[in-house]
Image 1 (cartoon, rainbow, N blue to C red):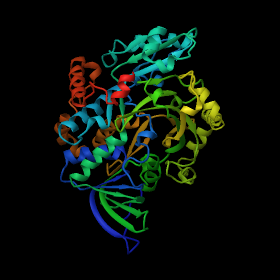
Image 2 (image 1 turned 180 degrees about the vertical axis):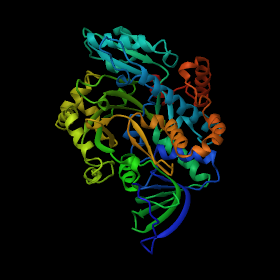
Image 3 (image 1 turned 60 degrees about the vertical axis):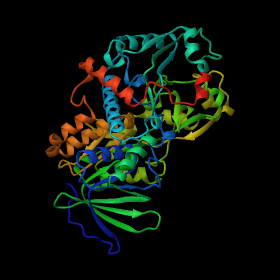
Length: 515
């Protein structure tokens, strides 16, 4: 049963206010939803609470993720091999469709002044799948054959010639033994996305158009009222003062912290969900000469038995208009649900309704447990050895280890299994639409726009139809599968590429010259 009581202000010193919408967390999800609501319902008041002191300081921070515009161009975990040697592409197509929605919204936002500087958050970077070994080369050829004829993947190339490999990826070619066969699926039209910069622009628009953003404020409790509204209790982490906010709608876009708050809300839809935290680390290149020798996002295959989130990749990043280079991820483990979270996060998330799910995953995911143990015991030399699969001549002094964002993988009830671990993103909302939250990780930020459109459709069914014309202005393909409309996709692609300035590379001139 949902927690539903009329809750008076328990602390008489607390400041009480009212708002139409509360956004919990100043990350890409809340910023995206706030920007959309500002346009479809400009008369609504919007209040955002962020527990840290900056926008996008957790998972949306550019060094806390790989910045891949997840369009499934290069991520091999989206294209699994079938027993007969064919390749399944349904998930890749779905993820690509979702990313096209995000691109369209961002382009519309640039045209209307919601976003002002596209080069600050999105830049063209080739997306590349890389394998070596005879069996893997055969798989990558089958992947290319399955995708290249599809409208959304039409620009993909298959490369197996060592000379061409060397020309395109000089850093990866130096010192490589080409007697071990190699292959690439190369797509020139990939992107690098600085989700931190994007979030700042979106939330800046929300604030400039009348929204209120509170930093250093942590939402501690949510209580539903008999009229369907919510009492949101907030603590100022700087001075300990309390706020009570009464809101008609609450969105919990708090990353790993979303599970706790959805549990506290008491909504039945959140029952049975659990979370498994996985921390990560990257090696960041400190040698400008090496950075200049690589311009691509290159994804390989996860080791046998390793989870999808462990897919190794050597990524060009463009942050603050400057190129960077990182490799990873190296998995770690912490009971925290946020990078700046608490060690009590995991034990505090175990409830009677999800206990069996949590225990079930502990039994069914022994492969993940073994993988994490092997990662946790990996030495600095071991990490460099892993990097050498991509950069054969890598040496430790050119790379530094950085801690990436914390991810909380969704644990969901499953009949006969107790619980299963899901690698994806899930929207959880109350049946009456008064509250919604987002759980999970990748592809996450890249699909923020379709995820928030989903929230609107679920939570505001009485208004969604009246909003639809405005939403279709933002996303012309809304309700249409671009897979089935090659002509429309071509138009949309050309338009968004022009508006987002994706026909030129936003890296320093010196770096371009070096390439």
